[in-house]
Length: 198
Image: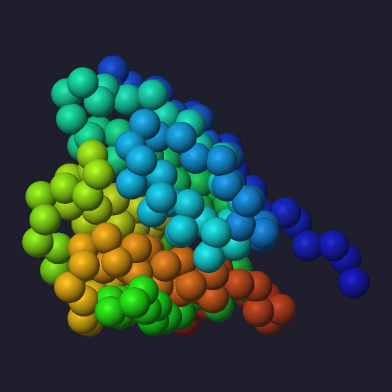
């Protein structure tokens, strides 16, 4: 049986707001090296890559003297672009997946369709303004921006919880588990769509 082609991507994104270098191995072990300048964003992206079993190196220098928005958004866009590139034509993947992840009192659900159609509905129910130096509104925005750049459909809900740190982390872990299953190679070959393209 021939060896499978490695699914990898490297992304460089440089704007007046951020300077990002990223490398991704889709079929990895969960090894990460992430430095965005925002501690809680590093924490969430580490959880995402680790539980998806992606190898991810990400370094960002952003305009944090303004606020956290550009860094959070651009890191998500770069990661989404890398996932889309690594997937190629998306042939032979499971495509659909869902997962639940608890973190103590919090429970999150994530449903993924590697559809080629970018859409996100993210309901985290966060009540704090910030967690660490990351605005809670940007936690939702990271997931939405990732889905847009990765060209996938993503539904994420926090079903229960009282601690915002737990709710956000559970959401990223559930998304990681769903992504791991959705990008998995099934061995069936072909593009998993009646249209013949994703």
